[in-house]
Image 1: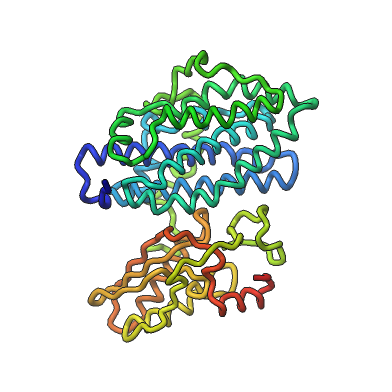
Image 2: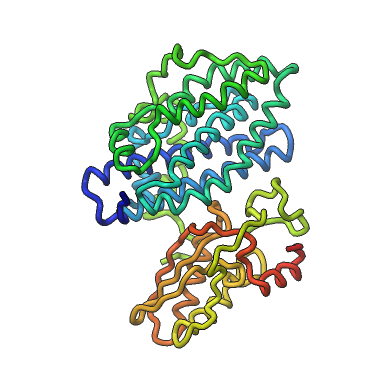
Length: 270
Length: 138
């Protein structure tokens, strides 16, 4: 089954497409907002550049998905700048603030997130919604080095004096990472319509099969996934931790201060 | 597109634009060869639009995927080398303005496509020559 473009969807199909797009776009956007905090604090010039570059990729991918929401009638303001922060559906993993100077957190988060991101994209290659399927190959090509970057740093940070920091990041972030696979209200429809060709439980299993052995190979202890209580706020049902509301206020500050009628465009694109 | 000239091509570390070689899909790059009339004029105008960071035409870079004319309106389909391109709106506007210089055209629509995903083998021979002159080894 293949759906057409944005204009021939039934209301139920539309709800499912929107939920899928907002989850993806919000994840990428908020992850990038947090990464850029490292732009001037990363431990080497190369990693300053790497983290800013990864953030730039994620902003680019967020834009791909917000563009498709705009094709469905939303404006950029409605998607980002004037959107009620209590309606965003990113996983609460990506909104967590970094403990001061905790590079291990940034690296581990990137590893957990980008591994999940890769699996999600692979499950969209054959999406029944062509505008999504058409964009996936480009994203997959740009994501590969994110995982390589995170993995090589994890190997470097473990086994020595920083090992405990990484372990603390695993303990803190792992429950939040599981919210990546928490369902939203239209999850059944997303799978039934073939918008995503795998359900979240299967994606979670595949993710665990990758991340658990890798982290254990670095002598890290990973919590037993089925015994981990999901955080009260998963993000997927628009519930969020306090840190998100602070972050939202920060990144919309300039927009609000300038009182722009619409986001600034270079040379006034028409 | 963005990269430091002299950076090793095909290096995994150069991330702005993926220069690792891929296959150029059949029918790409599209250059307007064989186009006639107003469409040919539009292709010619697009040849004048350069990437903001290097003196290479967007046509030679292989970024233009289709040109069509509907009455007095031009419809251009194009891609970007990199999804995080910070000059996206600028390039789209340059392409739109160029398309509108063709005779009888008073409006132009530029649509972004990411399929097939762009790769460096979609640069034309002439484009590669220009990139070499600019200091990149392709």
